[in-house]
Amino acid sequence: MTTPYLHINGIRKVFGEVVATDHVELSIAEGEFMTFLGPSGSGKSTTLYILAGFQDPSAGDITIRGKSILSTPSHKRNIGMVFQRYTLFPHLSVGENVAFPLRVRRMGKSEVDARVKRALKLVRLEGFEDRMPAKMSGGQQQRVALARALVYDPPVLLMDEPLSALDKKLREEIQFEIRRIHQETGVTILYVTHDQEEALRLSDRIAIFNKGKIEQVGTGPELYANPATHFVADFIGDSAFLAGELASVSGERAALRFADGTTVAAVPLHGSGRAGQAAELMLRPERIELATEPGPEGASLPVTVEDMTFLGNNTTLAARTPWGAALSVRLNFGHPLAANVARGDRLHIRWSPEAAHAFVRG
Amino acid sequence: MLLDFHKLGAWKWLLSGICALMTLFLLMPILFIIALSFGDSRWLIFPPPGWTLKWYEELFADPRWIGAALTSAKIATIVMVLSVALGLLVSLALVRGKFRGRAVLRAFFLTPMVLPVIIVAVALYAAFLRLGLNGTLVGFVIAHLIVALPFSVITISGALETFDPAIEDAAILCGASPWEARFRVTLPAISHGLFSAAIFSFLISWDEVVLAIFMASPGLQTLPVKVWTTLRQDLTPVIAAASTLLVVLTVLLMIVAALIRKGKSR
Ligand SMILES: Nc1ncnc2c1ncn2[C@@H]1O[C@H](COP(=O)(O)OP(=O)(O)O)[C@@H](O)[C@H]1O
Ligand SMILES: [Mg+2]
Image (cartoon, rainbow over all chains, first blue to last red; front, side, top):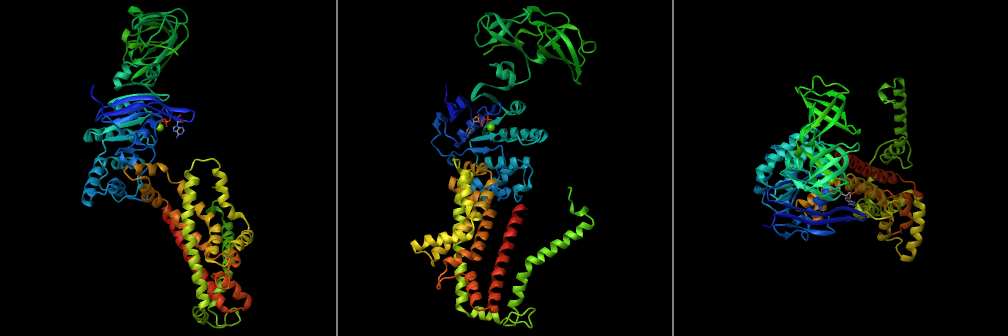
């Protein structure tokens, strides 16, 4: 295997009693858009700050093209970063903010002017050179910060939840800009967010963080179709989980038994497990089909309809399994059952065997 | 708002009147002194029978008055520089530091503000007797620095608290060394706090009289001390002229301080 461009090698960071990151291992290709996705406190920022050099890891190494960067101080790492908070220099104009990295590099005036102009054009803020940061909106300030982080052509750009303070519409607009900028510049981007939609929209690959560890790395579709753990399945997309136990295991498939003895067969099993262990059946709502008859191969469950909500493009049913677990099922607009389903109806949910996942608990 | 000024009706006029009276009351002695400094009566008759500039001429012709003014300016300038420099270092430690006992240390730095000045004066006098600092420039500077530093610490910490350290981090990732980041980004960003601290420190030293009386020697006295001693010997309108000059400089510096604050809030 060739040496990866950027390699995060077993990074561990401890703050007193708190383990912020635990053996984070990740390879990033040149020009890749990699997103760290995870709940608050899962160690995403800590990993980024270690890359930036603001914190030293307790163990592990980070290499770029095989060379460790840990002994290089932050200001010599030549890395760009956009922060969660607004960090424009308040006493400098937009133009001077963007020129700052070039001035500390003692670049000539004409070169500085040309680069500042190009960087502001990249973020679509041409002509804003003389504005003061305080006179700009949050979205504009983050775009200036992006221009300032890119103006010296850093090989790696770090972004720590740069859009989290903005409203949804503006956020989507700038996400689109960031994608375009990534394509235009080819810079390697490490992006932190806790918003799965943002991660899916932007990234080439996503690393799912949980409690200081990476649970799974993959493209959006990979993570969605094949979550490795319960946590990933829960975090990406909304899904239904039904608790039961493993009835039997054969190879990569398992049969699950629920509280009242109902079983489902041939469910792809993640991780290893033995018969008798507590486990969960996960179903994506859009892969569930509602029918009057049970499906073949035991890939179905009887349910009782409790309530219906019409939501325009679909009708969402609140249903209950025979042993009392709640479940929601979507019927697309125009589905033959949508018009005449009623409270108390006994129906069946069905799925194709690959669409379900079984996770051993604990 | 419950007490909206514009909705108070007749009360509005009463309140405005009270304010005007208060202002007049506070300004009266100063206006009085200024008038007397231009009055031609040797005996400080008010209202002055005529107008003259001779007290100012006398003031500027007297090397003792000029010497006292220069001493005051020299001490105030040194105090200003030291107070801002130390205030900045102390504020950095108090705001950015993460050590135990920070709150206690902060309270400690502010005690000279609440301690009666006379107690500080007596204590310093006793200590300086042993050190041989009474009547010296160094003694003056130390004494005034003690009362000026709390104001520096308050204004500079205040400015530093509203400055997000992430901005300094951003400067460092942009390629500035930590010291370069502090000088090129943090200091300019809190400059309004530094300027306010400088002006207040200068003014505190410039018109301080209690400590100065204890520190002064016949050869070394500040303008307020000179006013005080002259007043006790002979009541001449030259004192009014000197006081007027003190007030003018103070007012000018206060205006500058107010402009800085206004510029910052803009
Ligand atoms: N400077 C610090 N001192 C102590 N604990 C910290 C520090 N920075 C982060 N932590 C802890 O480390 C964990 C991970 O934090 P962080 O990396 O900021 O998470 P995220 O960015 O995913 O929200 C959290 O439990 C947080 O409280
Ligand atoms: Mg974070």
